[in-house]
Amino acid sequence: MTFECIRLELHFRAAGSLSFPPGKAANVLRGALGMALGQAVFAPKSAVGPSGLADAPRPFVFRAAHLDGCTIPAGSEFHFDVNLFDTRAEIRREFVAAFTRWGKPAELIAANDRVEVIDLAASLTPVPRVRIEFVTPTELKAEGLPVARPEFAVLFARLRDRISALRALYGEGPLDIDFRAAGERAAAVRLTGCDLRARHAERRSSRTGQVHPLGGFTGTADYEGDLAEFLPYLRAGQFTGVGRQTVWGKGEIRLCVSANNISET
Image (tube, rainbow, N blue to C red; front, top):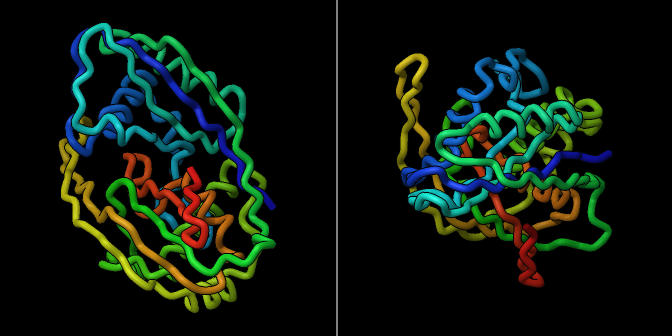
């Protein structure tokens, strides 16, 4: 059982000075994509998966945190990544074409892609501890309420549900695992320490005028226990993101296998 996505790297040259507000680079880019497409091609509306989602997860996330708070001078080059979970060639072409039509703010000068395939089988090597870095504001919920601390059972449940939903919509089908039993084993993994900071941001919809919060926590969390089963999901989570509003760039995580201090990006 695997999880697949396309890692699409887009390179641009700014036509004029281009500013990305702090914490909102992915929001700016998501808006640009919507305007370029002119329709909700990438906004499916259906409930799928064990999490009972009201709206199906979009088949992409932006990776543009390095642009937050940056101003790109006219004529300068910049880039960002998009992870595509619908790996059909026509979806990749439509996405690139949309940013080719971006036009006035910036010119698309290169588009490179790489297929990522994550084997979801348990690691054969014992994994006693990991560190997770929450790169962008992350909001996790348990029983419908936001949590202040990312206990592993909650983190794994949200990753499991998201990966299963994305596979159901765009891949080989939902996860073929015992969700309850895996959740019980995840509950045995301990959160041994965390260094988190609350981040506050919001976005206003140009279509409805509504204001949506984009906040959450950033920082690091350390976990100890029998993590071999869960390591592949954490690896996949680096591409999918976790929690609410991942399409706006929230919930980006980075994995470090602490025992060897090896970062996996």
